[in-house]
Length: 260
Image 1 (cartoon, rainbow, N blue to C red):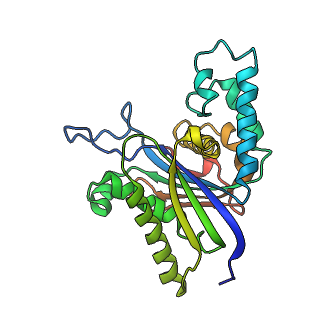
Image 2 (image 1 turned 45 degrees about the horizontal axis):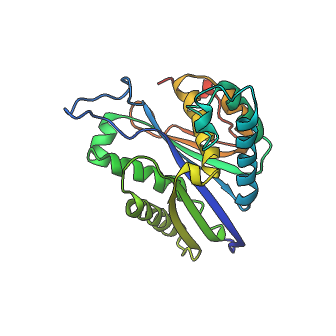
C-alpha cells in the first residue's frame, strides 16, 4: 500500500431518498407517495474546501441579488442554502454549470430497497441499512491522505453521530482485513447543517442528479457533472444482488441500469 499523501482531504456527505420500508402500521410502503424506491449515499471530496465554499457562497449572492429571482418565494431558502429539490429550475441550471467548472470528485452507493434484503441483512432496521451504506461508501478511501475530515449533512432529528462513527470504523476494519494492513491516518467525523457548510450543497446537487437518473430516467442533470464522478456502485437489483459498478472505464448511463 502506498504511503498516505500528506495533505488534508475533506469529504462532504449526504443522502437522497430515505431508508424507510414500512409505515407506522407495519405496512410495506416502498415506492408509494412519500417513500422512495432507493437510497443513495454520496460524498464529494477535495483538498481545498475553502475554494469550493467561496464559489457556492458567490453563487448564492448572485441569485439573491438578481432581480429575476427576487420575487420567487423559494429564493429566500436558496440564499441560505442551495437545495436541488427546492430551487427554481433556472437556479439549478446555474448551479450545475458552476459545479461542472469546479475541482472535486464524487462517489456514490445506490441501494434499491428490496424487502427480503432489508429483513435478512438488516433485521428490519433503517439505521443498520443506512449505516451499512456509509461503511461501503468509505471502505476504500480513508487510507489515501494523512488527515481526513468527514462532514455529514445534518437533517431531521436522528441522533446519529455515534452510529456514523461506528460505520466509518467498520469501513476501516474491512479495508484492513482485506488488505492485511493497518490504516494510520487521522479521521474526524462531524455533522453540520447545509446552511453552515456550503460544500454540502454540492453533494446535495450531485445526489439529486443520480436520484433523477434512477427514478425518472432523466440523465441530463447527471451528464452535467458526470466528469466529476469517480465511482457509482449499485449494490442491489430486484433479487438483492450487486449488479453495477460504474467508473471512468465503465461510465454510468441510464440504458445500463434496470428500471425501478
